Length: 407
Image (cartoon, rainbow, N blue to C red; front, side):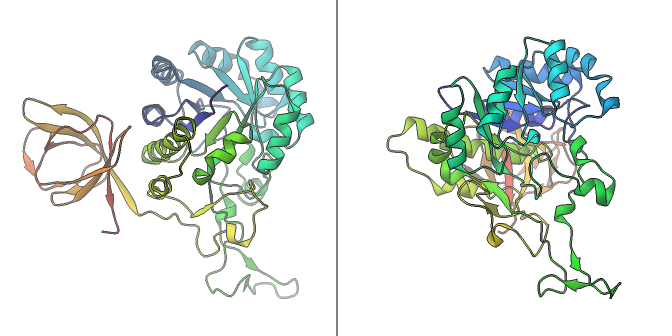
């Protein structure tokens, strides 16, 4: 790959479409089984086929996750599931388990196989091992520094692709090793059902004083000692690409379409600037755009150093949410001069909305008048996904409309 790929999450069909429209080169998704995000909507085979067609028509790719750590019962239907998925036209399968790898190779010998971050790949020899078996890509563990990635790149065949997470939630556990959710909540993180106990409040107890709970720090509300800030590498695109990474991956299949569109667009612009503008100039507006979507503040993870005290949020597990996603532009009625909007959250006449288009700068406008689908004048849009008509000049189709809650 001559140009680093921007790989985005697709938790459902709408998110897939938003990811592609706002600049992703490829998306990764799961079917109704075998993926590691049971909390996302995921895809039926019909939806998968529709999504693959949407991506391929625009020259983009789709990767299917089958990266649970399976038990025997999980393997029974894996071959038939894979056969149906391959028929939809997917470009690769992501697995973590050697048994699943073998099954995929036997069932669909021509499909490309990527090795998941769940496989905990942290060294050159492991990459070589998977390459020798026929894997075309490995997703590196999040615990690697940029220097370690460079070492791996220099020690493996050129055709072996390296993928790394560059944005999104961080896990307190080492890649593919989480048992905390299973132990505390009976929900298997290695099968996609993580309860996120790393975000819970914790107190300290002393063996001989049961029932007495002490804050681990001086805070009566407890402390979120495992609560990592979110990974964000938008300020370090040159370092990422020059480390030899083939694919830059965004986490977030459970996140909203607003999240996917916003984050993908910011990274798309930064990556394109790296390749097209000499010298490359970082723009802080990219980071500011990313900060408009829900987040837990940001860290650079392990890329430059091992995370320390400043890389965790000890006061709350809640997201920072400064903006509301209120609608998507679905078209324009040229005859009557009306922008057609599919509402997502409540907004009203008098609100100032920001417009995030698939390409180009963010703009703003104030809602002067609004009408419902039947053309009746209304002052507020209270019902999710209702059709709203706004009398104004055209806006780019599929633009995101949002409200700054701080104003």
